[in-house]
Amino acid sequence: MTAAVKGCWRDGKILVIARESALPHRCIKCNAPVAEGTKVRNVYWHHPALYLLILLQVLIYALVAVLVRKKARITFSLCAEHRGKYWKGLAVGWIGTLAGIGVTIHGVTGDQVWTTVEGSVLLLVSVVIGIGWTRLLSPQRIDEDYVRLRGCGRAFLDSLPDYSR
Ligand SMILES: [Zn+2]
Image 1: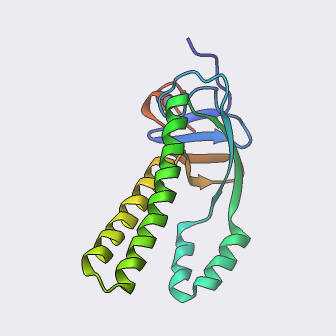
Image 2: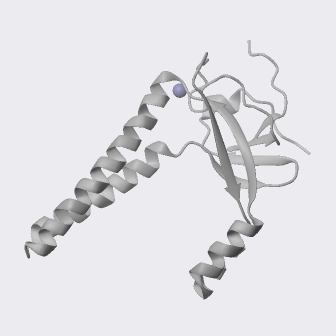
């Protein structure tokens, strides 16, 4: 059925991969075989407790986060359908966000309450769609040996061996 995969497991809803191993050439969302369209992404992760620093000072947080964050390079695939959805999300997100900002400014400067509200709603919806449709893999944890990622589809995860220590 599927070729043996090395260095990739599932841990419930989490994808676990050994550092620097590439994912199988199948869509990470629907598990469809993908001949081309391999993507490479860098993901970054730091311990969530670090976010507490934001309360202190955003600048301190940004500095410390860049210093201590861990980086991993991920190679994965998306089928034509899910690639299309990704680009659509990117386009809708950006165009809608810019339009929303424009309409909001127009409403504020023209003292038109409803135009301002419409612009704000458009802005919010666009940001939500943009983030929702373009989020592919987000790190849950990165350590010396493994990268744990959220965002894979059920079928793709089902195709992987269970991760167990
Ligand atoms: Zn797919």
